[in-house]
Structures are given as structure tokens and as C-alpha cells.
Amino acid sequence: MQLLIEKELNSCDKILKPDFNLKTGRELLAFYLQTKFKQILAYDKRCRTPIFKEVSPTFISRFTKRLINNPHKRMLIGITGESASGKSTICKELKNIIEQLKMPVSVLSTDNYFKDISALIKKYGSFDNLTDNGYDIDAPESFQLGLLRKDLESLALGQTIFAPRYVPNGTGVSIPNSLEIRSDKIVVVEGIATMYHDVRDVFDVRIYIETENDIRRERFIKRAIAERNQNEENAIKQWEYLLHAGEKYVIPCREAADFVLDGNSDLEYFDQILEYIHTITNNFQ
Image (tube, rainbow, N blue to C red; front, side, top):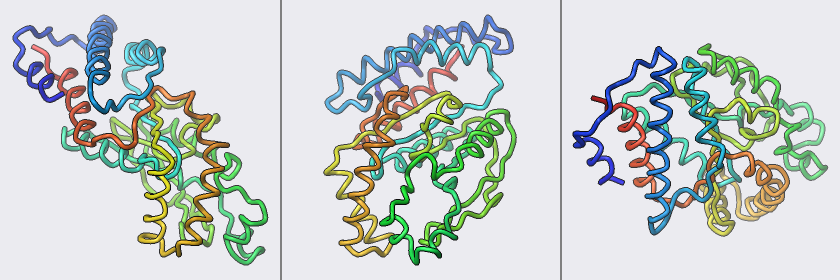
């Protein structure tokens, strides 16, 4: 991929920068991007460990149509996947490389849209008792999806939002209007609720991260013990729940994704793809 970047930068055969304020200019850019994106996919297929596992056949036409007809809308990128699939890592990497390329980016986690269940936890004595009695925290009904959609639509229009903040300490408290999220040129949204049916159509790019269960299990248990002070027995119990919840709620969202990415892929290679996309969209004569 680095060779493609250098070839693009050193090429003498560059197109004149179109006027993006005109529809004809945006149409030229759309055609140019279609050609280059197909080049990226062809290159990726030849790699020893491709990052693209699947690509929606309708993505290119839908995305370029959006660029042509609605150029002022903020770019919303949704990232989802099962627990410990690597979606947070990819999200952070995406944010870092976009910032390195001097482009404004905002990040929002849909985990902050869990409903406040503090009263239920008090009633049952603890979070574990609540879930043991059937409360399904990863179900779509456990999220404030109406509010999430409203906030995403506001971000897409360039408006700053004040998102809720869910406190992940076992109390089930959600603090409304707590997190200021600016609407930058690119908005990256991460979490299992990103592609639930009520909100998925708001996104311009929908990414699903997929990783083998044994890798996810090892990541999850290590993280639970090291970062969340859980003992191994409790971590394994929670993993079993997440495995079931993922099959029920998250995996079906895979079909709505524009890209299914390998969550165990080389992040340096991922960075190079992003750098190449930036190069081809800014390297005009």
C-alpha cells in the first residue's frame, strides 16, 4: 500500500481539481473515487492477510451518490461488532490517523446511550442479580435509541450535541446532557448499538469488525481482570452472556454493513489504506 501512496504522490498524470461547489465537479470526484476504491480492493485481495472480509456491492454507488447530492452533510462513520472484536481499537486508530492528516474528527460511543437502570439495580440488590433475573442489557430495548438517532441526525447537520453519559461502575446511572460532542467534518460512532435497526440508516459508512471467538474471549477476560477489577469466574460468566447476546443482537447487523473488516488485522496496514484514501482525494493538479 505504501507503494501505491508513493506512486500517487509522484504521478505526473493528475486530474485538474474540480470545483466541488458544482454538481459536475462532484460527479467527476465520484467517478474518480469509484475507480480508486476498486484499486484498493484489488490490492487488498492480493495481500497475505486482507483487511476487507466483505464489501457491500451497493456501497460505492450509494456513497458517491451521497457525495454528489448532499456534499455539506457531515460524514458519519459507524463501527460495530461483538464484544472484544477490536471495534474500539479500530475506532481509536481511525481517529488518530484522521487527526494526523489534519482533518477534524469527533468520536461518540453508543455505550453512553444505555438506559438508566439504577432503580432496578437497587430493587434487585446488584447489577449481577438484575441480569440473573433476566434483564438483557445488550438488547435494543436497553438503549435510548430514539435519543441516539436524534443526536446522530443533529451531528450530521453540523450541530453540537450533549450526549448522556452512562457510568460503567455497576450502579446503572445515566447522566443526561453530560458529554459535549462537536460536529466535526468526520464523526466516528462506535458501539454495539451503532447498527441496530432504528439508527443504522443515518450512517454514511457502516463498518462491522469481525474476529474469531477464541481471540475475543482471551481479550475480554484479560481486559475484565486488568481494567475492571473482575475476578476470572465473574469475567467468564459475563463472557458467556456476551457470546449469547452477540449471536442474538450483533451478528444479525453484519448484513447491514458496508464493510466487514478483520478485527485482527495489521493496524499499520489499516493506517496506510486511510492515508491512501486521503492522498487520492487531495492530490489534484
